[in-house]
Amino acid sequence: MTTDQTAAIDWQHWLQRWDAQQTRYLPEREERFAVMLDALAALLPADFVALDLACGPGAISQRLLARFPEARTIALDYNPVLLHLGQQALGTMSGRISWISQSLTEPGWVEPVHAALEHLGRPQFDAVLSTTALHWLPIEHLTRVYNQLGELVRPGGLLLNGDHMAYLATLPAFRNLADWEHERIRQAAFSEQGGEDYRQWWQAIEQSWLAADSAFQSLFDAYHANEQLRRREFSEPIALVHVAALAAAGFDQVDTIWQRYDNRVLMAIRGEPTAPIQN
Ligand SMILES: C[S@@+](CC[C@H](N)C(=O)[O-])C[C@H]1O[C@@H](n2cnc3c(N)ncnc32)[C@H](O)[C@@H]1O
Image 1 (tube, rainbow, N blue to C red):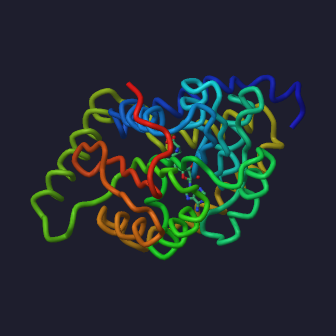
Image 2: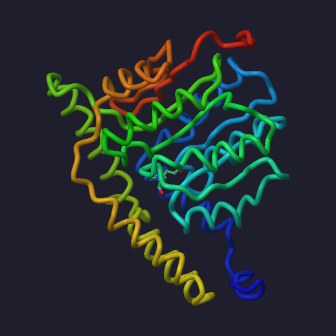
Protein backbone atom coordinates (compact mmCIF):
# COMPACT_ATOMS: atom_id res chain seq x y z
CA MET A 1 0.00 0.00 0.00
CA THR A 2 1.51 3.33 -0.95
CA THR A 3 1.07 6.41 1.22
CA ASP A 4 -0.62 8.38 -1.59
CA GLN A 5 -3.18 5.69 -2.32
CA THR A 6 -4.09 4.89 1.27
CA ALA A 7 -4.30 8.61 2.06
CA ALA A 8 -7.55 8.42 0.09
CA ILE A 9 -9.09 6.30 2.85
CA ASP A 10 -10.78 8.05 5.74
CA TRP A 11 -9.82 5.69 8.61
CA GLN A 12 -11.87 7.56 11.21
CA HIS A 13 -14.95 7.19 9.02
CA TRP A 14 -14.52 3.39 8.88
CA LEU A 15 -13.85 3.16 12.61
CA GLN A 16 -17.00 5.18 13.38
CA ARG A 17 -18.96 3.05 10.93
CA TRP A 18 -17.69 -0.08 12.75
CA ASP A 19 -18.92 1.32 16.07
CA ALA A 20 -22.29 2.27 14.55
CA GLN A 21 -22.75 -1.20 13.06
CA GLN A 22 -21.78 -2.97 16.31
CA THR A 23 -24.05 -0.66 18.33
CA ARG A 24 -27.05 -1.66 16.20
CA TYR A 25 -26.66 -5.19 17.58
CA LEU A 26 -25.84 -3.91 21.08
CA PRO A 27 -27.68 -0.69 21.96
CA GLU A 28 -26.03 -0.77 25.44
CA ARG A 29 -22.51 -1.24 24.01
CA GLU A 30 -21.13 2.06 25.41
CA GLU A 31 -22.75 1.46 28.80
CA ARG A 32 -21.14 -2.00 28.89
CA PHE A 33 -17.71 -0.53 28.03
CA ALA A 34 -18.20 2.09 30.76
CA VAL A 35 -18.98 -0.53 33.42
CA MET A 36 -15.83 -2.44 32.49
CA LEU A 37 -13.70 0.71 32.69
CA ASP A 38 -15.32 1.66 36.03
CA ALA A 39 -14.13 -1.68 37.44
CA LEU A 40 -10.57 -0.87 36.33
CA ALA A 41 -10.81 2.60 37.93
CA ALA A 42 -11.91 1.08 41.22
CA LEU A 43 -9.57 -1.89 41.39
CA LEU A 44 -6.28 -1.01 39.69
CA PRO A 45 -3.46 1.49 40.11
CA ALA A 46 -3.31 4.25 37.46
CA ASP A 47 -0.35 2.86 35.47
CA PHE A 48 -1.87 -0.53 34.68
CA VAL A 49 -1.18 -2.68 31.62
CA ALA A 50 -4.18 -4.42 30.00
CA LEU A 51 -4.68 -7.00 27.27
CA ASP A 52 -7.41 -6.10 24.73
CA LEU A 53 -8.28 -9.64 23.66
CA ALA A 54 -9.82 -10.15 20.18
CA CYS A 55 -9.62 -6.36 19.89
CA GLY A 56 -11.04 -5.85 16.38
CA PRO A 57 -10.10 -2.26 15.45
CA GLY A 58 -9.27 -1.52 19.11
CA ALA A 59 -12.63 -0.46 20.57
CA ILE A 60 -11.58 -1.24 24.16
CA SER A 61 -8.06 0.19 23.85
CA GLN A 62 -9.36 3.43 22.34
CA ARG A 63 -11.79 4.05 25.21
CA LEU A 64 -9.51 2.74 27.95
CA LEU A 65 -6.48 4.83 26.94
CA ALA A 66 -8.61 7.95 26.57
CA ARG A 67 -9.89 7.51 30.14
CA PHE A 68 -6.65 6.33 31.83
CA PRO A 69 -3.72 8.49 30.66
CA GLU A 70 -1.04 6.38 32.42
CA ALA A 71 -2.31 3.00 31.19
CA ARG A 72 -1.01 0.92 28.28
CA THR A 73 -2.61 -1.89 26.27
CA ILE A 74 -1.58 -4.83 24.14
CA ALA A 75 -4.28 -5.39 21.50
CA LEU A 76 -4.54 -8.81 19.86
CA ASP A 77 -6.73 -10.09 17.03
CA TYR A 78 -6.41 -12.40 14.03
CA ASN A 79 -8.42 -10.34 11.54
CA PRO A 80 -5.96 -8.49 9.27
CA VAL A 81 -8.52 -5.96 8.04
CA LEU A 82 -9.73 -4.93 11.50
CA LEU A 83 -6.15 -4.75 12.78
CA HIS A 84 -5.13 -2.58 9.84
CA LEU A 85 -8.11 -0.30 10.45
CA GLY A 86 -7.22 0.02 14.15
CA GLN A 87 -3.55 0.66 13.42
CA GLN A 88 -4.36 3.36 10.86
CA ALA A 89 -7.20 5.03 12.79
CA LEU A 90 -5.67 4.93 16.29
CA GLY A 91 -1.97 4.43 15.61
CA THR A 92 -0.21 3.59 18.88
CA MET A 93 -1.88 6.42 20.88
CA SER A 94 1.55 7.88 21.74
CA GLY A 95 3.24 4.50 22.09
CA ARG A 96 0.57 3.14 24.43
CA ILE A 97 -0.97 0.41 22.19
CA SER A 98 1.07 -2.56 20.97
CA TRP A 99 -0.78 -4.44 18.21
CA ILE A 100 -0.41 -8.22 17.78
CA SER A 101 -1.75 -10.40 14.96
CA GLN A 102 -2.50 -13.86 16.37
CA SER A 103 -5.33 -16.38 16.51
CA LEU A 104 -6.51 -17.59 19.90
CA THR A 105 -7.10 -21.01 18.36
CA GLU A 106 -3.29 -21.37 18.25
CA PRO A 107 -1.97 -22.32 21.73
CA GLY A 108 1.22 -20.35 20.93
CA TRP A 109 -0.66 -17.01 20.81
CA VAL A 110 0.83 -16.22 24.24
CA GLU A 111 4.43 -16.10 22.95
CA PRO A 112 4.28 -12.70 21.17
CA VAL A 113 2.18 -11.47 24.09
CA HIS A 114 4.95 -12.38 26.56
CA ALA A 115 7.47 -10.61 24.30
CA ALA A 116 5.28 -7.46 24.18
CA LEU A 117 4.87 -7.53 27.97
CA GLU A 118 8.62 -7.84 28.42
CA HIS A 119 9.05 -4.84 26.12
CA LEU A 120 6.76 -2.89 28.51
CA GLY A 121 8.84 -4.11 31.48
CA ARG A 122 6.00 -6.14 33.00
CA PRO A 123 5.94 -9.89 33.77
CA GLN A 124 2.12 -10.12 33.76
CA PHE A 125 -1.05 -8.13 33.02
CA ASP A 126 -3.02 -6.12 35.53
CA ALA A 127 -6.17 -6.75 33.49
CA VAL A 128 -7.55 -8.58 30.47
CA LEU A 129 -10.63 -7.23 28.69
CA SER A 130 -12.66 -8.67 25.85
CA THR A 131 -15.98 -7.70 24.21
CA THR A 132 -18.30 -9.50 21.78
CA ALA A 133 -15.59 -11.96 20.83
CA LEU A 134 -14.99 -15.05 22.95
CA HIS A 135 -18.29 -16.64 21.80
CA TRP A 136 -16.36 -17.36 18.59
CA LEU A 137 -14.23 -19.91 20.45
CA PRO A 138 -15.34 -23.54 20.74
CA ILE A 139 -15.33 -24.68 24.37
CA GLU A 140 -11.98 -26.52 24.22
CA HIS A 141 -10.27 -23.37 22.94
CA LEU A 142 -12.15 -21.14 25.40
CA THR A 143 -11.08 -23.18 28.44
CA ARG A 144 -7.47 -23.34 27.23
CA VAL A 145 -7.45 -19.55 26.63
CA TYR A 146 -8.87 -18.95 30.14
CA ASN A 147 -6.16 -21.25 31.60
CA GLN A 148 -3.50 -19.30 29.73
CA LEU A 149 -5.02 -16.04 31.00
CA GLY A 150 -4.86 -17.40 34.56
CA GLU A 151 -1.09 -17.40 34.12
CA LEU A 152 -0.90 -14.11 32.24
CA VAL A 153 -2.82 -12.11 34.88
CA ARG A 154 -0.90 -11.15 38.03
CA PRO A 155 -2.23 -11.92 41.53
CA GLY A 156 -4.66 -9.09 42.31
CA GLY A 157 -5.35 -8.58 38.61
CA LEU A 158 -8.66 -9.13 36.84
CA LEU A 159 -10.43 -10.27 33.70
CA LEU A 160 -13.56 -8.66 32.24
CA ASN A 161 -15.52 -10.36 29.50
CA GLY A 162 -18.49 -8.52 27.96
CA ASP A 163 -20.47 -10.84 25.71
CA HIS A 164 -23.66 -12.84 25.28
CA MET A 165 -23.43 -15.80 27.66
CA ALA A 166 -26.50 -18.00 27.55
CA TYR A 167 -28.78 -19.12 30.35
CA LEU A 168 -28.91 -22.79 31.36
CA ALA A 169 -30.89 -25.11 29.06
CA THR A 170 -33.05 -25.89 32.11
CA LEU A 171 -34.28 -22.26 32.04
CA PRO A 172 -36.24 -22.21 28.75
CA ALA A 173 -38.34 -19.20 29.73
CA PHE A 174 -35.15 -17.17 30.36
CA ARG A 175 -33.70 -18.32 27.04
CA ASN A 176 -36.91 -17.41 25.23
CA LEU A 177 -36.91 -13.98 26.83
CA ALA A 178 -33.30 -13.40 25.71
CA ASP A 179 -34.19 -14.54 22.17
CA TRP A 180 -37.19 -12.20 22.19
CA GLU A 181 -34.89 -9.32 23.19
CA HIS A 182 -32.39 -10.14 20.40
CA GLU A 183 -35.22 -10.18 17.86
CA ARG A 184 -36.65 -6.90 19.21
CA ILE A 185 -33.24 -5.22 18.86
CA ARG A 186 -32.73 -6.67 15.38
CA GLN A 187 -36.15 -5.44 14.23
CA ALA A 188 -35.59 -1.98 15.67
CA ALA A 189 -32.11 -1.64 14.17
CA PHE A 190 -32.51 -3.13 10.73
CA SER A 191 -36.19 -3.19 9.79
CA GLU A 192 -37.29 0.23 10.97
CA GLN A 193 -34.11 2.32 10.68
CA GLY A 194 -32.61 0.40 7.75
CA GLY A 195 -29.11 0.65 9.26
CA GLU A 196 -25.98 -1.05 7.96
CA ASP A 197 -25.47 -4.57 9.29
CA TYR A 198 -22.26 -6.59 9.77
CA ARG A 199 -22.35 -8.15 6.29
CA GLN A 200 -23.06 -4.83 4.55
CA TRP A 201 -20.22 -3.17 6.50
CA TRP A 202 -17.80 -5.85 5.27
CA GLN A 203 -19.00 -5.52 1.68
CA ALA A 204 -18.69 -1.72 1.80
CA ILE A 205 -15.21 -1.66 3.35
CA GLU A 206 -13.85 -4.23 0.89
CA GLN A 207 -15.26 -2.37 -2.09
CA SER A 208 -14.03 1.01 -0.87
CA TRP A 209 -10.49 -0.03 0.13
CA LEU A 210 -9.92 -2.07 -3.03
CA ALA A 211 -11.08 0.88 -5.13
CA ALA A 212 -8.47 3.02 -3.30
CA ASP A 213 -5.66 0.46 -3.67
CA SER A 214 -5.74 -3.06 -5.13
CA ALA A 215 -2.84 -3.99 -2.81
CA PHE A 216 -5.47 -4.39 -0.07
CA GLN A 217 -6.54 -7.61 -1.82
CA SER A 218 -4.08 -9.66 0.28
CA LEU A 219 -5.69 -8.39 3.52
CA PHE A 220 -9.17 -9.33 2.32
CA ASP A 221 -7.95 -12.72 1.03
CA ALA A 222 -6.54 -13.46 4.51
CA TYR A 223 -9.80 -12.29 6.10
CA HIS A 224 -11.91 -14.56 3.86
CA ALA A 225 -9.60 -17.53 4.58
CA ASN A 226 -10.09 -16.95 8.33
CA GLU A 227 -13.86 -16.75 7.88
CA GLN A 228 -13.86 -20.16 6.22
CA LEU A 229 -11.98 -21.64 9.19
CA ARG A 230 -14.41 -20.01 11.61
CA ARG A 231 -17.40 -22.27 11.00
CA ARG A 232 -19.95 -22.29 13.80
CA GLU A 233 -20.33 -26.03 14.28
CA PHE A 234 -20.57 -25.79 18.07
CA SER A 235 -23.01 -24.34 20.55
CA GLU A 236 -21.82 -21.36 22.53
CA PRO A 237 -20.79 -22.11 26.13
CA ILE A 238 -23.42 -21.06 28.67
CA ALA A 239 -22.54 -18.48 31.33
CA LEU A 240 -21.93 -21.13 33.99
CA VAL A 241 -19.28 -22.76 31.79
CA HIS A 242 -17.42 -19.43 31.66
CA VAL A 243 -17.64 -19.10 35.46
CA ALA A 244 -16.46 -22.68 36.08
CA ALA A 245 -13.63 -22.42 33.52
CA LEU A 246 -12.39 -19.15 35.04
CA ALA A 247 -12.48 -20.63 38.55
CA ALA A 248 -10.53 -23.66 37.29
CA ALA A 249 -8.02 -21.29 35.67
CA GLY A 250 -7.15 -19.81 39.08
CA PHE A 251 -9.52 -16.84 39.34
CA ASP A 252 -10.81 -16.81 42.95
CA GLN A 253 -13.81 -14.49 42.61
CA VAL A 254 -15.99 -14.76 39.49
CA ASP A 255 -19.43 -13.26 38.90
CA THR A 256 -21.51 -10.97 36.70
CA ILE A 257 -21.17 -7.22 37.33
CA TRP A 258 -23.58 -6.01 34.58
CA GLN A 259 -26.35 -7.75 32.71
CA ARG A 260 -29.17 -7.22 30.25
CA TYR A 261 -30.81 -10.60 29.60
CA ASP A 262 -27.91 -12.85 28.44
CA ASN A 263 -25.67 -9.91 27.54
CA ARG A 264 -23.31 -9.69 30.53
CA VAL A 265 -20.01 -8.49 31.86
CA LEU A 266 -18.31 -11.26 33.77
CA MET A 267 -15.55 -10.19 36.15
CA ALA A 268 -12.91 -12.62 37.44
CA ILE A 269 -10.26 -11.63 40.02
CA ARG A 270 -7.05 -13.47 40.91
CA GLY A 271 -6.37 -13.19 44.64
CA GLU A 272 -7.05 -9.87 46.36
CA PRO A 273 -7.06 -6.59 44.37
CA THR A 274 -3.99 -4.55 45.30
CA ALA A 275 -5.52 -1.09 44.92
CA PRO A 276 -8.25 0.03 47.33
CA ILE A 277 -11.70 0.87 45.98
CA GLN A 278 -11.59 4.62 45.22
CA ASN A 279 -14.48 7.01 45.61
C1 LIG B 1 -17.51 -8.51 16.99
S1 LIG B 1 -15.78 -8.29 16.97
C2 LIG B 1 -15.48 -7.40 18.47
C3 LIG B 1 -14.27 -6.52 18.39
C4 LIG B 1 -14.10 -5.54 19.55
N1 LIG B 1 -13.76 -6.23 20.77
C5 LIG B 1 -15.35 -4.70 19.72
O1 LIG B 1 -16.05 -4.85 20.74
O2 LIG B 1 -15.62 -3.88 18.84
C6 LIG B 1 -15.15 -9.93 17.34
C7 LIG B 1 -13.65 -10.00 17.20
O3 LIG B 1 -13.19 -11.29 17.62
C8 LIG B 1 -12.08 -11.61 16.78
N2 LIG B 1 -11.81 -13.05 16.84
C9 LIG B 1 -12.67 -14.06 16.60
N3 LIG B 1 -12.04 -15.24 16.69
C10 LIG B 1 -10.74 -14.96 17.01
C11 LIG B 1 -9.57 -15.76 17.22
N4 LIG B 1 -9.62 -17.09 17.11
N5 LIG B 1 -8.41 -15.13 17.53
C12 LIG B 1 -8.35 -13.77 17.64
N6 LIG B 1 -9.41 -12.98 17.42
C13 LIG B 1 -10.59 -13.56 17.11
C14 LIG B 1 -12.56 -11.15 15.40
O4 LIG B 1 -11.50 -11.05 14.49
C15 LIG B 1 -13.18 -9.81 15.76
O5 LIG B 1 -12.26 -8.77 15.71
